[in-house]
Length: 208
Image 1 (cartoon, rainbow, N blue to C red):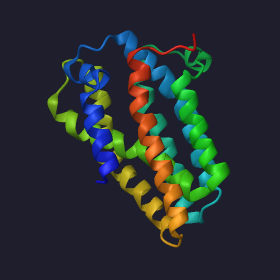
Image 2: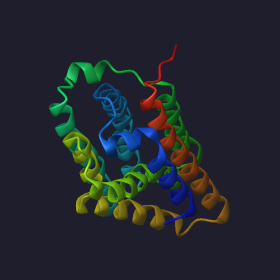
Image 3: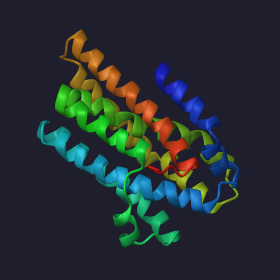
């Protein structure tokens, strides 16, 4: 595990949003807000998988496409249990942090290309996998929150994380040090926004 992910994981585990999920005290209204914003983010996340897949060889493209679809499936059960309708989700607009994160991701592809985009996508897998694996065994008293952790601690999601890491490594292999630095910066910034996403949800961030 890289030092950047180690730090992001430690901070995430200490964040009141994650602590509240783990001990069951997080208000359901806060979790609903998170799921609405997360759905809005994952729509862009899925489109960026498609953008990246179009730039890869067939084998990698097929893997990437399946990874993007997996994120959607993991959320649909929670949406149903919290009665989050398609209309409500579609009406959700990105909060400031969500908007900034999406803008950062799109910029990586436009300014630096496929390798930086892949590096920017990776923290969404890696950080959630680390948090999920650590907290799934603590058994949140709220079954919805436990389901959230379980989904990211699962063998399937761990496999997806490892596949995404392998794609990033393969794209990095032929590149020079300058391109590696671009990838590193994309990765670091995405880790930052992943941490900020918890805070955005915790305070139910608004534009005004």
